[in-house]
Image 1 (tube, rainbow, N blue to C red):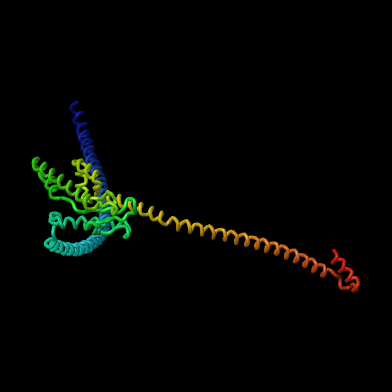
Image 2 (cartoon, one colour):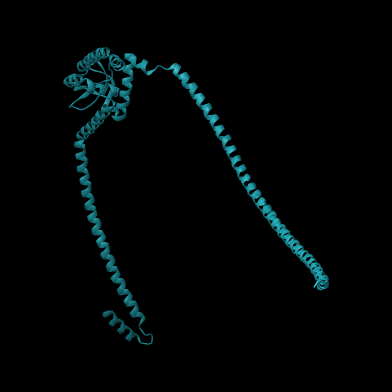
Length: 362
């Protein structure tokens, strides 16, 4: 048994050695092939990565160029817009400087004017100036509505009293005097003070002034046989007019009794328009006879026109009848001319004459 192992063992060892050798060679070859395959894969991956990198670089370059071009276009547009805005801004600044210079000049003129003119309050605080202010407003209203023949300013009446304006109306009612002066001091004190006692005191003074003024107008500007039985008190302030009708009904009632009608610019305008209608109606009445005469002449002319139209119509009818007869004659002449053309030239004169006589007889 031992000898057998001695014989088999070298063979086994040889076989094992051969197996190890061949295994080593096989593993070495496989490792070589594997390394080659891995190297090939790495090379392929590197090539693919290189292509991808080239493509990425190409796309990046294209994107960069496209972005650059768009930025160039956008930059040009922005530059054009900035240039336009700059020009417009310069123009606006130039216009603004011109306007500021005009405003400065106007402000200087206003300052100079304000240092020279008197304020409206100073004008109204003076009775004479206040009367002139009311007269000017009255003149503007009257002259803008009525014809010049219907009014007269600063008219002296038979009692040697001068009225601010005399409205010339036919009888009745007759001419109406208009006074443009009004008491303002007490009214201004009444509306400006905040103390109740002072307000009441000013109200009493204002009422007394208005009563005196109304009675003075009735006494001076209502003259029987010369003026109408009423007069107008013109207040060139709607505020005073409203104050009277709101808080002083006694003054309004007194003015009705004295036949002195209190009017404001608005109500005077309505009154003047009514007067203009009255004047127009009176003028129409005065011209009634002339209008009737002109209407009669107009009717006479219309009659003559109708007669001449009838004659023209008869002449026209006669002309139409003459034209109709002329047309008949022309038709007969045309028929006879046709008959003459139909005569045969080869016939003798007697046949011709006989033919003509028959034709003419027909």
